[in-house]
Amino acid sequence: MKLHGYFRSSAAYRVRIALNLKGLGAEHLPHHLRKGEQCAPAYLAINPQGLVPALESDGGAVLTQSVAIIEWLDETHPNPPLLPKDPLRRAKVRALALAIACDTHPVQNLKVLARLRELGLAEEKVQEWAAWVNREGLSACETLIRDEPGPFCFGDAPTLADLCLVPQLANARRFGVDVSAYPRLLKAEAAAKALPAFANAAPEKQPDAE
Image (cartoon, rainbow, N blue to C red; front, side, top):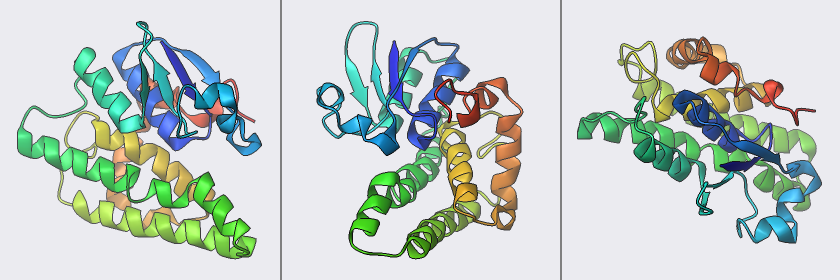
């Protein structure tokens, strides 16, 4: 397999964690987002959205969108499972994951922030916007799992929710968010980061880290 990504991309970070948890190897192909390498014609031929990650399977199929990639990995390599068998629990895990992957991360990603700058917003305001988005999203997530026993987001093993949470907390810290306001999320993060699969997927551990 080949994983197209970027060390700081939280979406690619999610997929790296999933690959590690499943014990799967992949050739990592970096595309420097700040240099616009994701918009090169050769990469657009792989992913017309010009986003990372994209995963090329051993059979040559190309998958895009991190959550779809992770669910495919989970279906084709079911151990350890990243979604509960119980339909209600599975829906709750997906809901938290999507609250991050669909409603929080995209609104503060590089593409959106670049557009805000193009529209003339001062850099201070751009950073404030990103911090606000993270606070809003993480506050909701804190409430969603407040009564879950843990130590992970949903029980005693990591799920898709944890794969989305850990990279988003890293984003929040980069934008100066005081994450101490989210003790339940931090509990899940600590449990996750104690696992080599999470630790080895961290941005600073990647070969293309700046």
